[in-house]
Length: 196
Image (cartoon, rainbow, N blue to C red; front, side, top):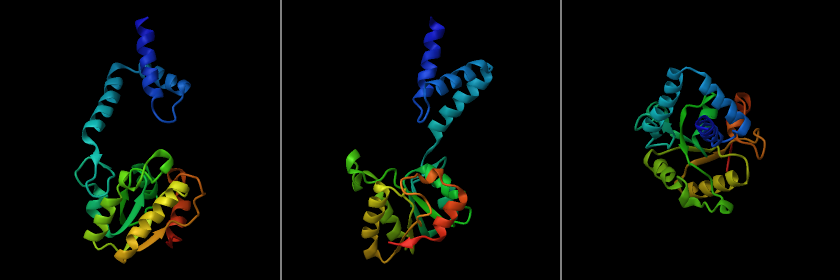
């Protein structure tokens, strides 16, 4: 009985991950249990280590082990690409020809989810644009209703600051997420971005 309870707790832990159903969670649990104890300890330690050491970059809001992420330390601060969440940075970094920095909003404006402009990192973006004399802000939020509303809201705030605000071209299908776009699509979308 104790084994079933322990196994079921492990399955439930995996099932709590996004996109993981019961069958997949069960497969993960059986895999972990079938490994030797050292592998399980290393897996658990990797999770604990990440939880303890990873935080948000004080500049862009992306995940980092340091106070300021490597992208913010080394890249052109005059161009900022605004994204919804950290996984969008990973997707856009596949393009390999973007030399600016990012700004992670950690959400989008969504009245249906009771999330307004003050609930995401818009104020911090305005401060960065002003402080660094930014010349261009690329709005790379998802091409859906919330992403478009957020992009237009931010563009409206930035216009008085004489900064060029562009939006990724619509090579990315409306309603899709940036994280699932391939490198060629993202490259074309970056190249064909337009001012808003």
